[in-house]
Amino acid sequence: MELPDLSANTVIDHPRALTDKVTLIRDAGPSKFQVIADFDATLTNYRVNGLRGLTSHGLLQQGNTVYDDKRQALYEHYHPLEISPVIPIEEKTKLMEEWWSKTHDLLIEG
Image 1 (cartoon, one colour):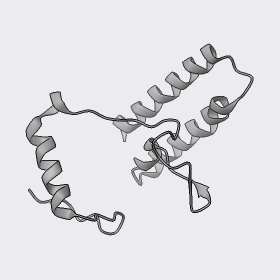
Image 2 (cartoon, helix red, strand yellow; image 1 turned 90 degrees about the horizontal axis):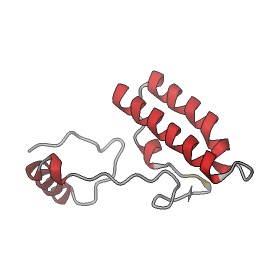
Image 3 (cartoon, helix red, strand yellow; image 1 turned 45 degrees about the horizontal axis):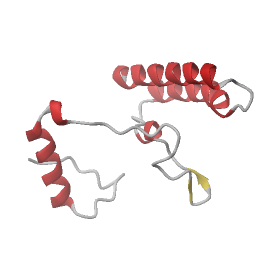
Image 4 (cartoon, one colour; image 1 turned 180 degrees about the vertical axis):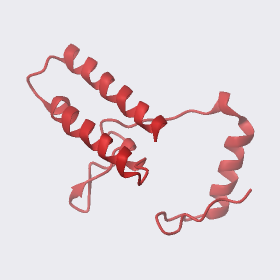
């Protein structure tokens, strides 16, 4: 299997190992596929070189300005709610689920 050239945007330390992993994932099929999402920067670095790091959704930016603008608008609306110390946890949970749902819909749309 041949992978697209990602060298302009990605550093792949061991290209053959990556190819082997992709093959294993494809061979295993969708019933064995799992996705780990990191909405609150518990897995990704919060700071990278002094700047805010990307979240898992941020890493999935598609270079599509329509999608990216919509995603940014959602971020600007929901992120202040996410970090607000005055919103009760029950309400905040519903808002975060709403944000995730809308962002996932954008991923599908994009």
